[in-house]
Image 1: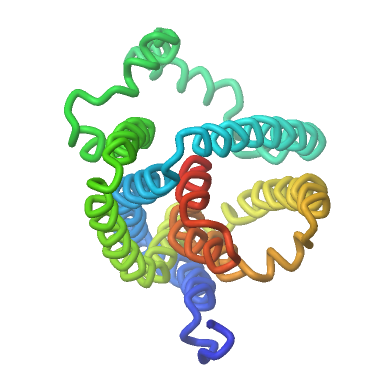
Image 2: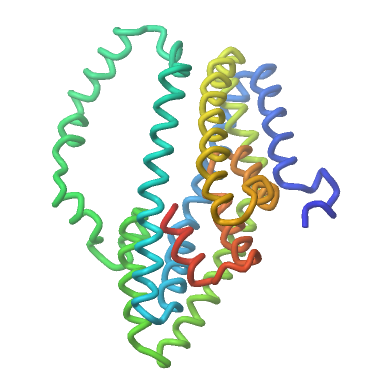
Length: 305
């Protein structure tokens, strides 16, 4: 556990230190700070590279290991209903906070000129038409990849989910013959988690580069507006976690605050890297440590992502 490690070896501490160093470098050496952009981009690309195979393995293993389709339908149905209801409450809280705080004010000082130019660019490139042209049928058809491997190449998680579900059903229908395949997928998942563990160790480098580029390009003043925006975000997140998730946790018989302490490493890692994907492997493993079945964790968490 991180509590037995020296403080300087804890990943989220390294990330926070890297953020501070990035601010200093961007302030003192702005030209050098601008050149650090590839460090942040490279780290995010490395994380995104691993998400599709991890999602595939966890979903396939989670669904196929359930065995009974009735159990899958019951758990999946509850999961989707829960996500829909709770997401709606999250949107309501977000709308209230953004209406009261207006955290985006001041980000476009050019005002109408800025938006007119942006609209002109959208029109000239046909972005607006493309965005409005996709019908429901086109959206659903877009979930189907052109090839089995195409979903992994494009990184479209909806396509990856579709392939994962189909393969999971096929393995489940094989009965005992499918167990060796399921074992192989579980082993592959451990390999991908291991790779992600290696990649996440580079998070301080990515955070340093991203912050150095931001401050070097836009100046230290840019952080003030960003801080207001982030404050609005964390107020929203805090209200949602304490009020909504806290009530759900209380109704379920446990404390939301004890749970937050249990996953504090993942929370601080997300805060430091501004990427929730970095917490995916740790969340799956910690939920299993809490006693959740591997099949439920493998279905619910990737579906949430």
